[in-house]
View 1: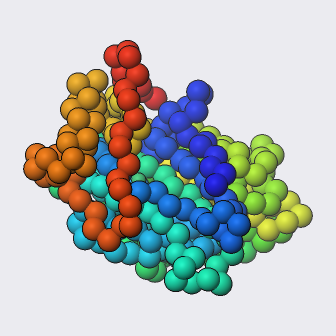
View 2: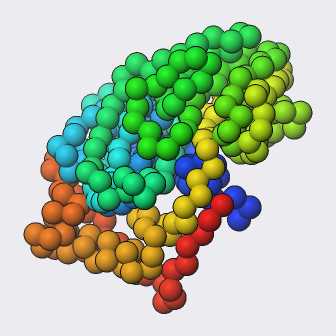
View 3: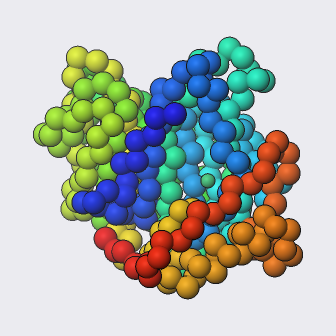
Length: 293
Ligand code: MN
């Protein structure tokens, strides 16, 4: 399927603790078969899954078996290590047509990045209406409503739906930097015209910003937080702080899929997925270097 990786980019690696944004679809799953990602590991991050259309089934090493649909949040906190699979559910619900959504990652801070793995599903996220727009707050606090989802650094994420022609003055935390990922429609953010799939960046220091919809309704995702000052190394599905940490995590994942108890202890095991796990790619033949904001 078509995946637009808008973060990290050459110009920007973080927005708050968000270090990764994949924007996918609308993918016609009756033609492509939809998503099918075999069991794979994560360390040092959270995966934030949010759909506009369709359904994805999540299985993980904690024994979670959770379907996610639009308006719901799947939040997986890797801590020191977890593994999961993500697959479409066309066989179960053949009336589905499109798969369409985002997956964001947050970098966990040093204080929690080696903690226990965890998973939460939020079936009803808090929402509010403002200047004709509908805002679903799936992480953090916005417009006076707060998501119950775990956040280890100050951050926010929300879906914004604006009717055609709307002008919305959105109050935001001035300590936060923000990104606005435009999914559909015509949108002007803080005076700048955007195109679908663009990611706008707004530096800290504003108490509100102005969103103006054009002639079509707008769907966008807002995410941001306090600038994340720690240096990270992000390679494949692994976030560490040093080259050696990444090498060790990769080796332990390879050991886990070979059935080695130390590897399985670190990453666990997915049961119920029909197929083998994903082996890690080879590391590049250079020392991985940290990156910062
Ligand atoms: Mn994953």
